[in-house]
Image (cartoon, rainbow, N blue to C red; front, side, top):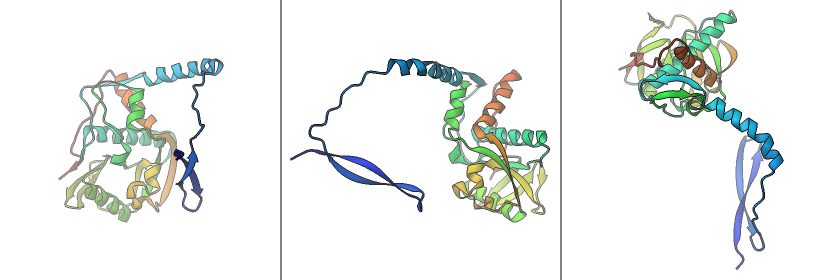
Length: 247
């Protein structure tokens, strides 16, 4: 019997926007796999880029006194990353004379790994935030702010900055924005990622904002810049749990 192996052939369906696959049997008789010598000319061209990338990833960012891991309802890692994005959004708004963000909200799934103690490198920034997501600003109605707060409570916490709330069962209670009680009496501006702004992770309260602004700042770049600011100031990374989400 002739041996068969299967080649996975992708079939793209535009209506579903997903790739589907069909197994096609292909006879293996007579097939040979031969080693191919590396193209020395091409390799010579690639080497400088490889070295440059390695040097970039090895660049020092900031020293962390302890390992950082994400946990609920809050953690040093989730807090400092939300603080980084919040700070970038505020700086951008000030420089571009745009409206001032009231808070920042991200998602746990977007933070892909823990960070070790010691000197953090640019490579660590790619590990913790490998996506090319960008920061956006959305203006939400009081009703959508309530949905946002209750979403945080239902999830048991989220990476946030600028907001403080108590989780009471599946409901959010005692909401504060920038240290002041929030009475659901006005629209607010939220900094988040473009992935979440378009409904990622079930954040449907972002679906119909009153206003929407793109900053073109990558979330990873915001984290790197914020982390570097501690080293520039001669400090280790200021990552703390401060009770911004509690029960």
